Image (cartoon, rainbow, N blue to C red; front, side, top):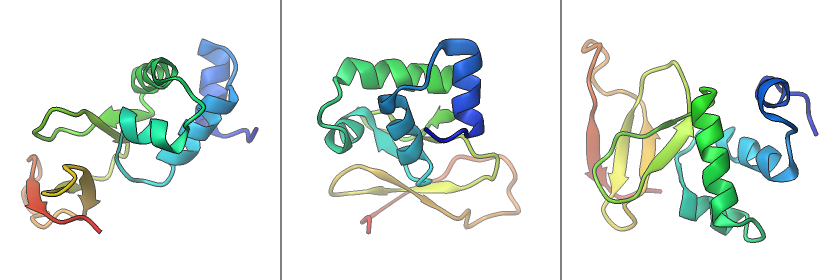
Length: 117
């Protein structure tokens, strides 16, 4: 496995970085949003409970953050200090990261509706 900072942090405080954890880190490095169900589709041999445990760990150590959108499903993305907003697809309800269209307004949450790519 690669020695990336997040893997080193996991190794220091929470045990080893398993193949499942490494795969999840790789998926979040794509800088997109993921739900647990979407992650399980990408990792069909991984138990959903394992995915949730790793999401909880990643959130605890600050690697990922929940995406504040409306709807029943919780989405997560890599915790990025650069502000951006989200387009929520009307077909699949998945949020997609978009550049902030109103950069002069420093603190806000903007959720736009549309169709994802």
